[in-house]
Image 1: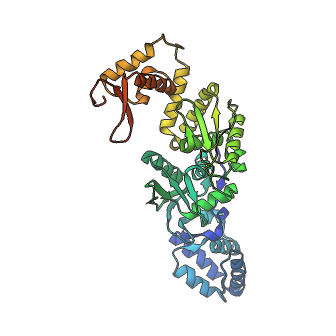
Image 2: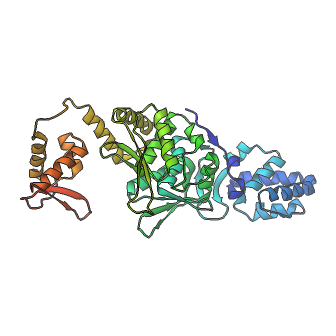
Image 3: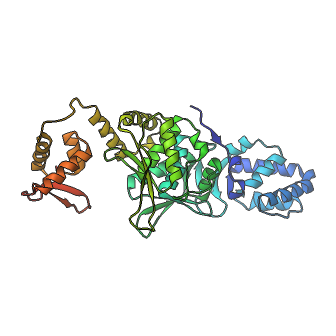
Length: 397
């Protein structure tokens, strides 16, 4: 499948600088020098164009320009390369083939092995959704993403590298000690520019209209990303957001994919100054279709895989497809108790053993706790486990 492409000259040109391969750089500037009869004209042209990029220059002749950039600069402003290439009639695709690396105009984070042109795949489409759900967009265009789960953080970084190539990256810690990964600001500007995004604020954000109009696989990627960051798969597939616009857009996508869905639900905060939360579910009857569509996405883009939440969805489908609908009275409770005789278990482990929904597991566990048959406790990793009340703690198998 062919995906839309973003070439380097379609980036915000005033916001990054380019390092050209040495052989090409020499040939490029030698051609400028060869056209020395046009020196005053070139200087005048560049000075005039520089004001359009808010980078005013005042070169009198080409010699000063050559000295400033051919000899002394590793990274040359992208807008200057673009305008010089137009002036000396150098093919922009040829320039693209010879870009060794690039960097945000002001900032750190060198893109060392750039993927050019950038392909607008479903992985690219997932980036703004991640930032709207669990990230930050700063005034200078820089993105950061917050994620406690190490594997999910590594997944995000892989997505970014799949789209843009290798880059210098770093982690910071928020006051809540959640790992926060910062991206070069040029990445944020490329994404925002392509999708014409006005805000990433959680209360005001919406799914970009350009993304809403893309094909099915992009829409699945949006739902998968949203679900990973701000969704629930305990017993159904539910999406949450403080932005009503974002939830309404999600509803449109679900409808376009021909899934059933519930009404948009508003959860009013307990405190008057709290924030409303909007949610919507994919109907139980449509979860198998969603499951198969996710499989197609992950097959083509493995780093879009949403791990545990996909396994939850898979379990929901397995339960729907089991060859029995309801056990005899007390049978499921017996399965739970027999399992706990072997060792303590999590609710998820009991779900898998009993081949029942997580909601059903919790329902039975609450009853067993009430009649003092079962106790729950926290492990040293802060996980909840369940054991028989008259049994000492035993290591899980």
